[in-house]
Image (cartoon, rainbow, N blue to C red; front, side):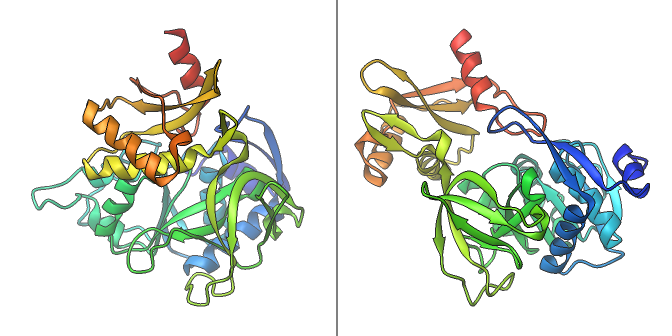
Length: 352
């Protein structure tokens, strides 16, 4: 890929409005109109947050038809980066020589980092580790990071951050450190971003990148006071992401947040050195209304492992959250940005 990208040409022509599509991971993809000023504000905030400067080398390895990839291009234009574009792949650094390659900044999806860290050399260390360690900041977004991946990230010296954001917020508005002594389970809201919750406990966001309009999400969060020790934003409000309001499972009249169940399962599997992609969903049930089911990509469990998983959930959340079944799927359906398409995956399983 080269910088003669359609978006770059349009941006350089002075266009003031851009139509982008949402990823479709939580519903039908829809067009979103973003202004040049919104995208410029987001790019500058990223530069300030991570200490990025003109002339820094940045790798673009995400789909540039969607917000995460597009904003890497915008950051390059606004902040004066030296951009290198490669086609999205599981190992975007695999073709670069670790001895001679340097990047200051990059954004990946979890699967890309997982693949790169699993590709080890004769030293037992990931082959691309010298490249990763040379970066000022590494961003991870587009999907949740598993406990196994977060543990694997500890070999990286450069700061790695999970990002929270969406097309409507013009990329990330909050970050959490994934490695090193400053790692955290909490997202810190970036400077200039105002957040709150509605009656459901769902996050709403107002910022320059949203054109100072309130964006209401379906993400259930627990808001916490600012952390005076945060290097990224010492005055920033923090929040714990609990899950999506529209994914809650109602089983026997009890509401279960599937993301909480997924987290316990992933931690349990990590103890057995297993890290499959998985998700938890509610399927129709005549007696319960919905039953809790785990969908795993390509990995089955022994009877003893399955019982241990169920027991961990029973102890961690309660008996109502214990999954009734473990459904193995060969390959998950995905959106255009590589996120798991849960509805399509369930539909595919039901048709088998």
